[in-house]
Length: 80
Image 1 (cartoon, rainbow, N blue to C red):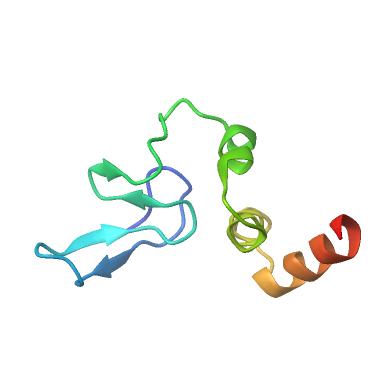
Image 2: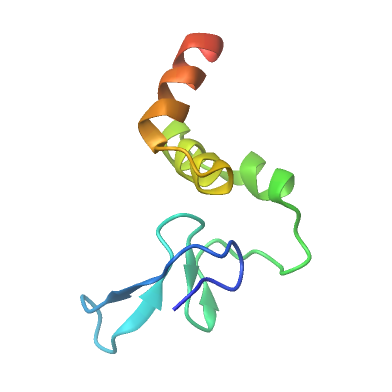
């Protein structure tokens, strides 16, 4: 199942009382939204709300089609 927000593949989370699909890239939960994001929010607005550099690297790498480790090393080099 594809995420309606970012387009990445969603995974079935069975750690809850009722299993539901979750996107580990942007935080979208099937018919719910863990990060309370409107569907009209741009990628830049979403990027500014991410809590840490790993979430940002995962989000950017998904959009660019690169491994998250490459994006993380680039971000470390320029932002630290």
